[in-house]
Length: 276
Ligand SMILES: Nc1ncnc2c1ncn2[C@@H]1O[C@H](COP(=O)(O)OP(=O)(O)OP(=O)(O)O)[C@@H](O)[C@H]1O
Image (cartoon, rainbow, N blue to C red; front, top):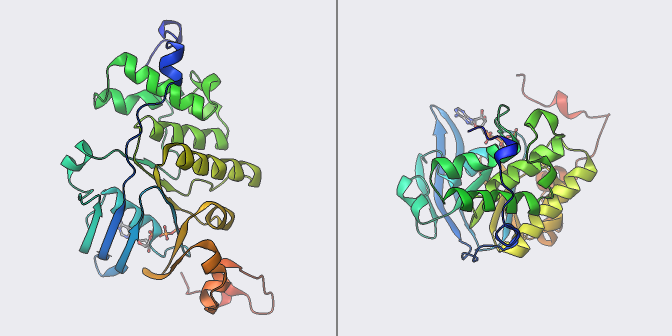
């Protein structure tokens, strides 16, 4: 959808600023979850609960299965064994979306370059008739305001910085008025100050909207600062699950090396890596 900025009336002030009635946050139950792609087993027997309204971060080395787990929670992929339930509902069933507002913030933003920021945000709700046009416009303007992006409404993604793109991706998820927000690497490729800004936004959104927030991240500052609990995956298995303080107290050398990697030129890691 292309909209002409000249023809886009400003929303009434009160409709843009008044938040919708809060929907109850939702919890996630994962039981015996395994996932294989052909002969490769990527997740093995994952069992965990995510509480309504918590910030739950999934960490782990590259290739440990974090994004695959997030896709399972989002219902984008079917498990090989086990179950995922969000408030008792199977996220992979299309009918679940009638009862559950789930939104995903993709790693690369996944914005349409040919659409303005406003149209990127309005596209999904218009296509799925989540509201009438005035209601969708109000939702979009509200989301842009929350992320301090009002002045970017008529810009194209190519005109935005990396940090702004991430904020637009979060704003696009907020338009769904989600009960559960899934973030895939929200601070990747950002400088430390912008990564801290996005981290604060995730915490603020949870605080103000009680949205259950599941974050896949390599960012230790994010994980250990704002998370209620952190899961660490290694080789597709759940190796640790605890509050940040509990994780820091663990003595398992693989976990401590993961959380505090030291650069050791005498025994470089790359020499121990498998040949690609
Ligand atoms: N659709 C797929 N088909 C086949 N293999 C896949 C598929 N998706 C993921 N994998 C494999 O599953 C493993 C885990 O991938 P995943 O993307 O979950 O890792 P990750 O922990 O998120 O890594 P990173 O931190 O590098 O993003 C990898 O070996 C990957 O190649």
